[in-house]
Image (tube, rainbow, N blue to C red; front, side):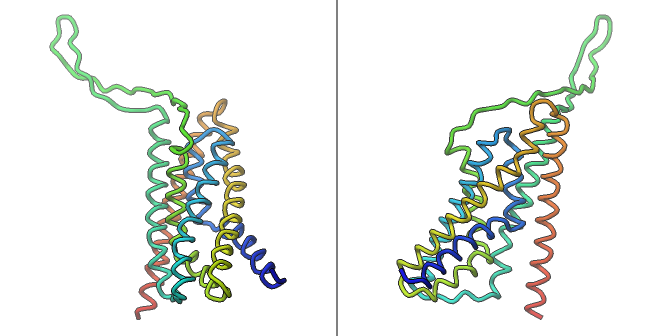
Length: 240
């Protein structure tokens, strides 16, 4: 390989790391990481996100390289819409899980006391959180799918437009693999860092843990709504 090719691949690796640090990526992964109490599991989540992201990039990149397709920037907002929907869904699920594990549920029970007619009482019940061991593939399923969605998003697809400048198909695919390796490494480290407050508060500070999980979910919903609003505004402004 000549110097220019090595430089391009090195740049691809660095861009992969940088791409993993995009705000929407970190918000999505943080909602998944919040469900776990292990640094190891959180790192695995980041790894599977990167693998899913790379898989979709390879799929799209193959078409770009083979067919020399030019991706128009005008379609980028439309391709980002699934990301905003996904962030809202992930956040809503995180809020629901955190609220449920707060330990409060309301039930109505009917009672019949001696000498009295049957009547109903409103009861509050608490639930203890159960920590389950997850199979590796089951653990990675959600972050892998989230990574796939992010890989098909506009910013990632526009990034691989650089593939049309690669002299050969093989070199273009190597570029995507190097970019993907950077994104896997970047998200592995970031998911581990993001998990620290969740792991640190999981056992001895369950109330704090539950609160920050709830806040992470609310932030994801808010971020998804803001992203959807910005995308809608951008689409409408392009059409006017």
